[in-house]
Image (tube, rainbow, N blue to C red; front, side):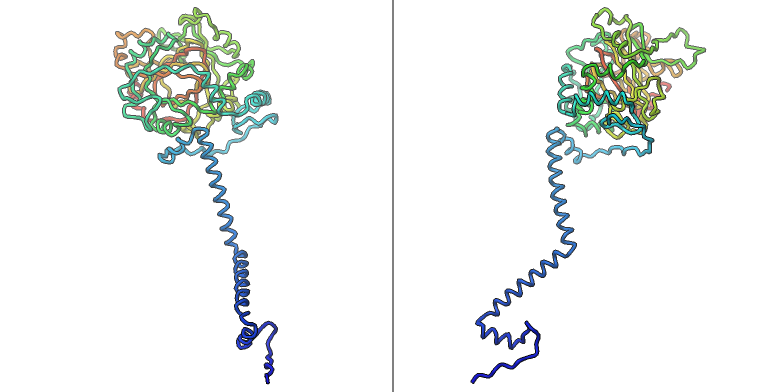
Length: 494
């Protein structure tokens, strides 16, 4: 006779251990199945608790961000390879160079034109007129942004480089070492440089005395920074931003439309020789001195009519020459008060020369405007030095630069301080009188031909003698001083 199990006061779904044992015995192993169900419920509960934990969401978010960053970095590297800039970027991290910090300023913005937003324009400087905005809108639509096209345009625009003589330091000027070698730049006797290629001859010889390095902007950027930091001259070319300006300036009649009927400074000389002068003591000019040039005010088209001539007889050294000039005030006076008919658009045209940290600006806060000089064939700027760092870009045509180290100051026989043409050499480089200037035979120089797209870094106090080899456009800007070359200049009386 079977006894009926004793009932217990327990809640539904709860069993004593004895009951569970009896059930297992009665149900033939259902305990195993029940354990699995309970384990599954436990796992679900643990997963739900983990999902409710905010740290899980944070970690998942971080993982997504890391994946996105990796994808972006891979895209940037691929783009740099496409632009051929990766070697310079890699070298920068392997051999970092300290770059100046951008200047901090609170400049009052100018009233912008509402007709068109000039690409890369700075709010506090530049040309904000509707007239300029419409001109740029028209040409920017024609020349859409395409750095490779602009670089190719400049490359096709240039003439072949003249082969340099081999220098005893055995560095290749087109493949220079990362840092300036000792004795850089190599220099030859100045007298030999101007004898082998006479200054009045605008046709380059088969070889030139080139001692300064030429860097590719996208491949050798870090090298260029190293040479700039060492305060030695060099040339950089291949900058897409420079190329874009050149392409625009040589499209249709853009420059003529840009400059319009405004009358700008133009120096006039009865010969091809030009020497800067300023007679501060007007009552007592030096004995026998007369003004070497005359200052005119003419339009660009008037200058071009006088300068763009093909008759060689009218380009002879004893014929009149014209040297056109533009001045952009920039932060000196954003409203253009530094010159009549100032060319503030230069800060929108030459965006690479804006007062911001770049290869071209050592101390942006000390920039002294942008100056452009358009030379006709044969125009010669006599040998002289400047009192600050200089970046010089050629935007069309060719110029020959003969460079001399400041240590040769005494050998160049400068006009003394106080003279209207102080800082300039008294010597006629076309026909040097070695009896009167015997030390000139010991001076040493090197030369380089600059073409469209070339930017020359000229440190403070380096002497330069310039010859326009054809019709050309050149602009320059300055950014601060370097005192490392002061001593030889002081010994010269400056």
